[in-house]
Amino acid sequence: MTRVAIVTGGTRGIGAAISKALKAAGHTVAASYAGNDEAAAKFKAETGIATYKWDVGDFDACAAGVAQVEKDLGPVDILVNNAGITRDGFFHKMSKDQWSAVIRTNLDSLFNMTRPVIEGMRNRGFGRVIVISSINGQKGQAGQVNYSAAKAGDIGFVKALALEGAAKGITANVIAPGYIGTEMVQAIDPKVLETRILPLIPTGRLGQPEEIARAVVFLSSDDSGYITGSTLSINGGQYLA
Ligand code: NDP
Image (cartoon, rainbow, N blue to C red; front, side):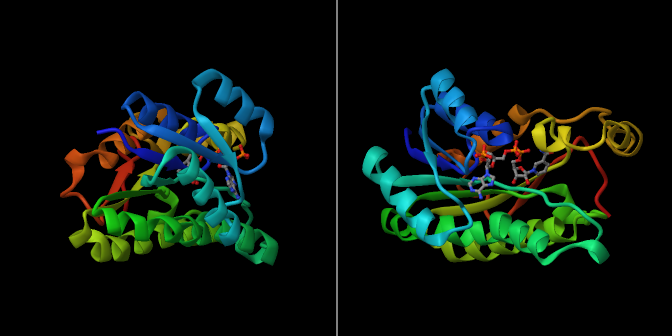
């Protein structure tokens, strides 16, 4: 069935792959982004997918953005909360700004984006909420106390939302990627990647954005209605203690 989907951060990296895969699955997609107009314009020209600019950390902007998408494309049945940032640093050196930016973009965004769509989903008796967390929210990561806290918060958010939505046809699930070859990971020092990260990945390689996107397509489908409150790890076999 064709539905309307919003993918936050849907113009680059993992989000772009998700937007394209949802479109290929027959859905009408709105891809949101923060400020990289050039990347968004290129993405729109290449894919024909509608793009929208707002800050997922700003509740009023999210409510207005969702209202605009619903006016343009119709009621939103699928929400992929994908937008995220890192502001790494050891905790004893971390500034309040580094902390707040990451919590705001990666965790507050779940309230900001999901709240404006949830009542419509409940009224229509169908909804799919998917949150892109991270392996580092499952196991912790040095230099990422802020990011690990936000990404662990994703999991609690989804577990509770799943309980509230279950009787209304709304599922909520987390995907927890390992290291995926996007600009976010390309920003890691190549020596650190080679010597400290790749040796920990049993498959011996970074994941591809499309490998996350395929799972999102399934979790957004009508076929996945009995899967809710779950966390799907897509990380090349990394062991989670
Ligand atoms: P990228 O940095 O490649 O892309 C991030 C996207 O999010 C961009 O479209 C960006 O918009 C958007 N964005 C960032 N901040 C905001 C904001 N405040 N409001 C709206 N949009 C925003 O990230 P990835 O594709 O690598 O990551 C996507 C998600 O996957 C993130 O949540 C990340 O934490 C998670 N993840 C990534 C992993 C990886 O290995 N890459 C591993 C595990 C999890 P713009 O283009 O305008 O900047």
